[in-house]
Length: 224
Image 1 (cartoon, rainbow, N blue to C red):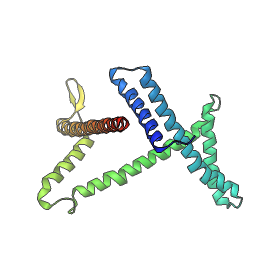
Image 2: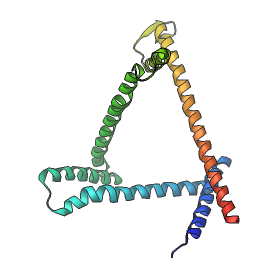
Image 3: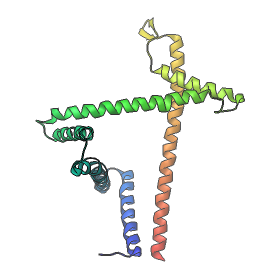
Image 4: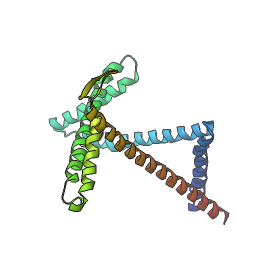
């Protein structure tokens, strides 16, 4: 069945309106309508991810090279190892074979942790430290900004350290200098998290406003 552009817009607008109402119904409490919409979103996302894996990962990078027939030994080894790990992950579906799948899970967790740590150090920590004192980052008269950035980074890191301790009447606690620095770091974290939370709220309001404006525009176009 071929739909015209007007019919497609009508169906899309009705579906968008229904799902918007279903998701916003969570404001009055958890209800079956919200659960249905949530399950549909999760199911569509999972199906889309599965299609991406099949047609953009497995088919071009595993099935097609192995079906070509002219694979070098080095290329075959690079294809077999991911295939074995994939089979191990599939074995996680069965309770008896699940321990075998832990090998692939351990590999994925290890690689993911290494990539995350390496990316955080080389892509975030070192660039921020270098930019904090770089001459190109800010004019020389804004030295206070640089001092605040460095103080925030250092005191925030010290908040999570407990190596400087002192014996008190109530037990072992942080030493007074360490406690002061940790409190300063806590203040920086509170301000940062507050700004992030405020940004999330503003983003949610912007998304909600855009959704309402879209529905109003659809209703006006449908009426006229």
